[in-house]
Amino acid sequence: MSRRKKVASVAFTGVAALGAVGLTAGHAHAAGVSKVTVTPGGAYTAANVGAPTLGDTTTGNTLTCTSAKANGSLPGSAAGATVGTVAAATFNACRVLGLAFTAKLNKAATLTAIGTTTGGVTQGSLNGISATITGTSGFGCTAVVTGTLPGSYNNATGHLTIDPGKAADLTVKTATSCAGAINAGDAAYFNAVYAVTPGQTVSAT
Image (tube, rainbow, N blue to C red):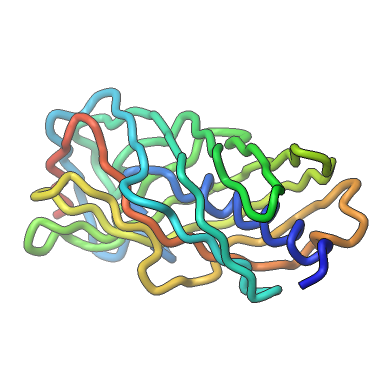
């Protein structure tokens, strides 16, 4: 594997992971959801459980990272399908073959339920993702990635499962000083489990 492909894999998939960090995550807006209630609601934090797996579906490369965190707010009760927001997120400690990066959300993303809660599990989507990655450890590539990510939240465990089907729902929009290592149009998935603190009970009806 060339260094160019390795750099592309590290840089792009880091943003995929960052964009995924939230409370609930899916592909589309709510169908038939009239109200969402979240208890206790208010401010929350989220951190990965285990090692997230990142994959660049354009290059076919994957890597494992160790640290992803986010925070935001949940309104408690809201008409419509909105669950809350991810106000900020960071992604660090991702490394492969000596290459590393950091990443952050450029703006808040919206958490939306896409179906009514069944068996304590709510399916949803993290919408309006816009994230920037910044290469470290010797490469200066930066890129902006946008899109949505699917997933579900389980009331019993307080865990968010991100993209279990490994759907490539993020796209590179711009790339600067990447020397072809990462290109507009690349796609990626992010697969992980996150713990939400404090644990929430989500009910979409």
